[in-house]
Image (cartoon, rainbow, N blue to C red; front, top):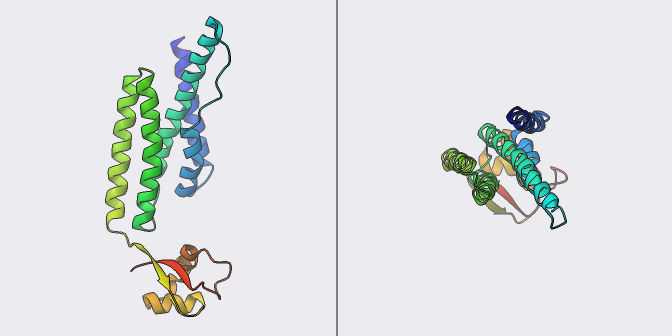
Length: 188
């Protein structure tokens, strides 16, 4: 029986790692793994002993998959390169919320070792993103009197036209010739 559960746990880890390996961008890995780390299957109906055992098995299976996703999520977060201070904080909050939610579920189910491991993982992720994000530029709202091309805005704001792709990405515009009158940009 123990080999079956070990094999299932290993398959859960393999699944989470395969999802992460399916994309190269750590931001996409995080986006794909967050729903798996929070997945809760529908409740099995019934009140008899068989349905109680089925619910217990379902909870153990779901928890195993969520824990595997949490591990892969932490790995993806370590590889993630935040673009701004706010970006680092948003990722920290989303990932740590997912890790702490699963830690709470494990504690409620009496799985103390899993609870402790997830709490330590959440603490490590939070410290890592806090440190890496601390020295990053802040996103600020830029307001202009008239719409200008993104190259002009990049030169005006930074004195560097090579920063134009980042400016276009942060402003989330349809066409780089028409910057909006108000848009987010890095403060440095």
